[in-house]
Length: 419
Image 1 (cartoon, rainbow, N blue to C red):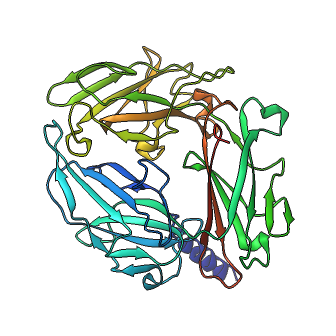
Image 2: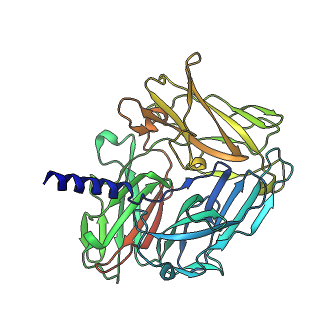
Image 3: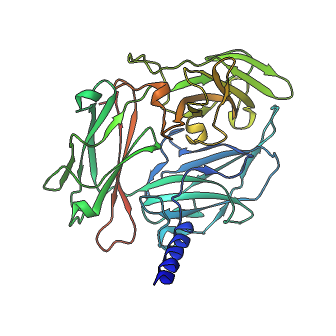
């Protein structure tokens, strides 16, 4: 009996080891930089389009190796948790299964040489047949097993209506720090037999996956209207406005830029950053974590925007024995890894690091990972306030009892400052 139990345990471990991990925005090649995926109608927007509407997304990225390579892209249909579905490619893609990226330009008048690539889709070669989550994969020489990077995108088939409000927290302890989302989903003529099973809603703050909250059970139901307003759900830390710096020019110091060195490479020293975990809120304009490729020194940022080693410096009342600090933003997919980790300088009592990034305007913030608990949070460094201006993305998924995939049937963008 013990022998059989051991075999079962080993098989279970092996199956879990090979289990598919959810797709995420990831980069697997160090030479690929400045990846942007957004609607052609608005730069840096949430990557969502309406099914068969004529709307398009645009992918852009740079290859720092500078030569022209054979890059291809394809899409994989995923469920609401970003795991691959069992849907055949022919069921979710119209046209080819993969396409070559043929739109590229060489950099001009830059110290860092690179090749800039772009592609828009859906296009005449590839389009989507069904709604849902899609993972975009870009790879070289048709080798799908070794992607250069992956990106999430959303295809919407509007079948429900969504409305909502951003309020202060219902919990008196969090009214100065949190923001609460109350919303309603009206599914109309959609065939919903069991709302607790057929419909689920994902909420995100500023397009950040780590902030995501799932709602499966509505608080109440009125006819075809599902109401989500329980006091215990959708209570988000308001956080703080993002820090930002302006690198549109490398000729003079601009916002938050302390010094610029230009030689065989561009080096930019940002002004030192203090802690912001105060109870009092202070407004400053930001782009909710986004970044924009811009260059006032040239004429076309996609080809004449240069790269620079940008140095960040953070003063704290903590040391590397207490934990680790990371610099994050949409420019690095909010990744907590070796590339975003900051080193500690005990003499000055500061954390510092550098990021190799393209000219533009960037939002960023600092995340602290506690050495004792392992908990990651931006609040110990940045603070949190209910007044902070934030975007909230609400995504409604529908899967009937005999459905084979999660349909994306509703989307709503809420903003704390726009009612």
